[in-house]
Image 1 (spheres, rainbow, N blue to C red):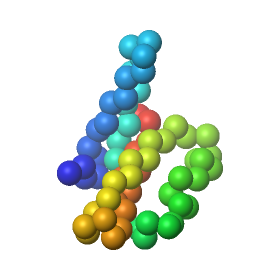
Image 2 (image 1 turned 30 degrees about the horizontal axis):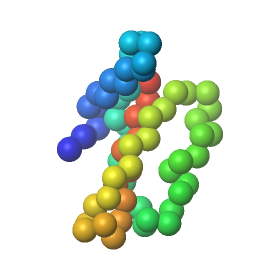
Image 3 (image 1 turned 45 degrees about the vertical axis):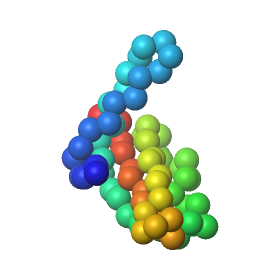
Length: 66
């Protein structure tokens, strides 16, 4: 489980890596798509979404590039 301050590293096919830090996490309903907004004020962000509570809700983990 990721928590505030944890780091995620994404590496692309060209072997270039970007590092992101968790700054927010919350649970939403499955039909709530607001977390996928790309309006970040120019910041590079990573949004991780997975099922929780037996598939009845979604856990969203938001990360910012550091």
